[in-house]
Amino acid sequence: MGANTSQVSDLSESQSIRNLIGPDAISENEPFWNQLISFTFTSPTSSADAKLLEEAVVPLAKTLIQNNPRSGNFGALVRVFLSRTKELKISTECQDQLFIWQAHNALFLVRCLLKVFIREMSEEELHLQFSYQERAPGTYDSICEDLLEELVCNLVHLIVEVPLLDITYNILFESVTTLLVLLSYQLFHKEILREGLIYGYLTKGRCLSLTSRLVKTLLYNFIRQEKCPPATHVLQTQSDGGGLLYGLASGVASGLWSVFTLGGVGTKPGAEQEQNPLPLSNQSLLLLLVLANLTDGPDCPNPYRQAVTCFKNTQDTSSIPSPQPHTFQINFNSLYTALCEQQKSDQVTLLLYTLLHQNSNMRTYILSRTDMENLVLPILEILYHVEERNSHHVYMALIILLILTEDDTFNRSIHEVVLKNISWYTERVLTEISLGSLLILVVIRTIQFNMTRTRDKYLHTNCLAALANMSAQFRNLHQYAAQRIISLFALLSKKHNKVLEQATQSLHGPLGADDRTVLPDYAQDLNVIEEVIRMMLEIINSCLSNSLHHNPNLLYALLYKRELFEQFRSHPSFQDIMQNLDTVRLCVPALFQTTGSDLVYTPTATF
Image (cartoon, rainbow, N blue to C red; front, side):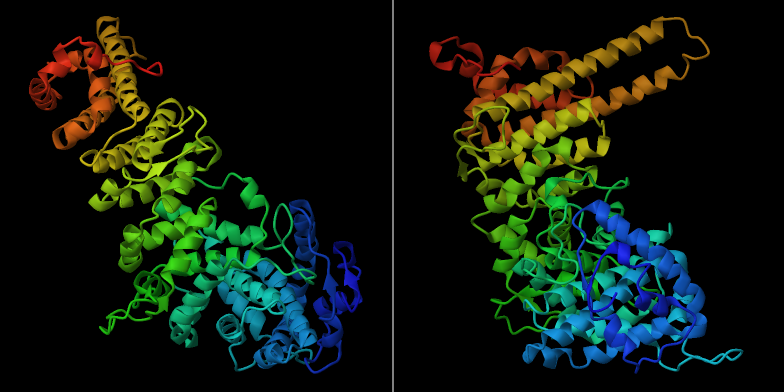
């Protein structure tokens, strides 16, 4: 690298890079550093190019690992970057693009090397790489300053102090991503890391006082959704696979999913993940999620989680001081708009879940919105395209619905919102339907998909729990939604009868050595199905008990398929619920006995 434009193929041939990774020490005051960081690097244009760049960096970094104890050149590179950060804010005010560009390039080199270092060594060994300095042969010395801590603190200061402008976009992106790289040690450990040097720098050291400002800045970076400015020098992420470390940062966030879900790895790459026109917004969100989900230390809680869980609306004029530390104010309307617009991204869905679950101020604000459809529709679209989404994203979307449906006001209001022409719902043309009926349709479709594909008991339970939360507030259900409720019950009944028949046949058949393990499986399957059937009956019973007169379509659907319920009337597991349904039937005898044309139910779709 040097003053000219560099390519991946130039790295191993570059004399400047050879000098950097070589055994000879280079003083940080030498003109070599200005030459080294005066380069324009062509950004990778595809994931394959990004991989080539990473593969080119690995052998160079390994050579530096071997020579750095003698040369101390890595520490010198870090100090060169730190010396430039001291005047970065002034350079921004003076529009000194050359100074900012060189500082950015120095940080880019540090970041590329750090990724390999972290993969190859422990945190203690990494700390040593920062401590080596120029020394004569046969002697050893180390500097007194903690250069790693200086780097971490300077990155945090840079993020919160330097304004987001076109000329500072790239260095802010590099700063955020470098912090992500430093926090990526968790990727290489199966056990949860509860303490460490970098963890301590961020949660106990000099960075602690900047906690609320850092969280606020990262949130505003996400809210602003600034695109990468044109004619950038390094890592303009316009590729289908992201920049060199975009994959690493995404991996950190993907690792977080296992904290909240049942496990599994990876994310199905979608079109929205392959194109990343908002690298700073995306990386800021990833860093925020990583910080907020750091585990509590042995003697102190995670300050970043505290900041995320207690921030308030800028319109909150309450004079009552918050008992929580690290609190701040942010524009809830802008944050809500960004959350609504970006739900196709799984990390945004994770942020929404975190705020709904842990920040009572944000949850109250969201539930008070009169345009709830802007938030709910993207969540429903995620569930509708369940085949294309990874299980973590589906689970998070479902849990968000579960949290929302715990509020009775939400359950009432969604039936008052009328939607027209839902383009992504392709199973049937819905020219006009309430948000509540659409929610029921999508959740039932998710249940049916799960029954035929994944067969996840917990997914069933969460879907049915959301319907149960809503059931008492069902109002004017769409005819198709009423049909789907009964068709789901019909599917469960059919499955129940099939498993029951198989269990009966196995009891009467000869028991061989391989057959003795079959009976418990049938019994377990039967118990699961009966539990789901009972939940469905409770949902129907709750609706009829609380809002019978508001749901004629559901009542007509029950009448049309009333034979489905006969087999469960004498079943000991369902007798109490069936008795209540019979009571409802007696309250409306005309509906169940007349054959008049005004009450004839004509289905519009086959069950």
